[in-house]
Image (cartoon, rainbow, N blue to C red; front, side, top):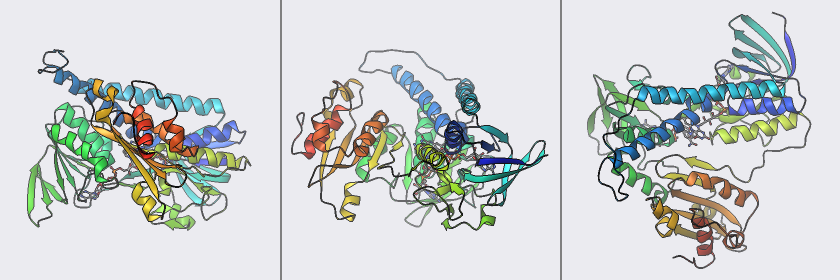
Length: 461
Ligand code: FAD
Ligand code: NAD
């Protein structure tokens, strides 16, 4: 095969890599994107999209089941059932549609795609192992966007009944029982979905709280809902081994418990995919991740890194934003990755949104803050949706009212993440939000009210 020479080579077609390639090609850069699997990466194929599809199906089924018993709405339905094979086929259909969409966006932008596994020979040369043979590619600039993969617990290797999130999102029957090791993002999103589909779920979490990165006020409504869904949560515990359908778990009091499960889903975090020969480049690392500066530039000139390979927060929208900035930089623009915030949404039930900093983080930075919190119990829209659990909380500078952080937990609050992020990106003050007319009746009125509370008093509490 004749060597390929390009201006820009992007390795990995996840949300970071494909966005970078599309943007670069649109800016007139001769771009080649290399992908060993399918376009869209973890997010589109085995992550964000498949998990949200299963969560949606589970929500709908759970609702139908609730209508089969006495309910205040007066709706009755009989014995709803689910053909889960069909559900998964529907989910796969969405994934395929989006795979095709990404391919067509790349083509229309003028970016070339090569399918195969890339391996660095040096900082300007990569070998791509394709079905047709080995293709050498030489590039002026290379962007590493190889993403991440699930962390395996050595005593609980993946395979058979021990699943990673990838297999858990491709089951063709709803399991009778599942133990989830790791009560973080993935474990609780997928665990709540299977609980709604009828599985008996136990969550084994090493920390003293589920979702330990959030404060306990934010996670309390999620824990309450898990209890309603009959999910057993064991905290301060660690899983040891799985034998003959029994998972041995060490508890914090020193005793051992044996849990019966059809499947064990291990969701204890994700690790970077550096098997493209990153080690050989001797890049400066940040723990297991590639270290980058504000421009996503690595320690080697002409080599950039974006997305999960660069560490936390491992979120699709961060990878995409980095991809765009890097494409602009390579095109000679004066860009920098200086976002005021990266919103985080946990699609549990209820959902959690955090943007900017918490009051505790403000305290650690010696910033005096005013905090305003509005309970959704006092929000009319929340009541009409039968979900008045949760709250919206605003953290603002005491001296000038500039909003530094917003945290919320509630039904469908994920959709408020854009308003929250915009407020922080635009340096809004609590007065700006409190004086903006928010449509009635909406959950977003809770945001306005939380700002009023930060200013000294809300209208509806
Ligand atoms: P990836 O999406 O991992 O893509 C990397 C690509 O590189 C892959 O396609 C891989 O095949 C390819 N690759 C790797 N090595 C090579 C090589 N040597 N040669 C060629 N190709 C290679 N994030 C959110 O923001 N919201 C969510 O709701 C959300 N839900 C999630 C749910 C689950 C179950 C999981 C697992 C993750 C979820 N995430 C979510 C995280 C999100 O998927 C990642 O942050 C995002 O995909 C990272 O994008 P990336 O481009 O860095 O890498
Ligand atoms: P996570 O870091 O969210 O949660 C892992 C959990 O496992 C933690 O609570 C941790 O204390 C626990 N844990 C670690 N070792 C353990 C052990 N041996 N036994 C029991 N518990 C243990 O990781 P994740 O859920 O695997 O998700 C990985 C990443 O994917 C997240 O950090 C996030 O960036 C991304 N993600 C995002 C979304 C979203 O944006 N909605 C959804 C899913 C995943």
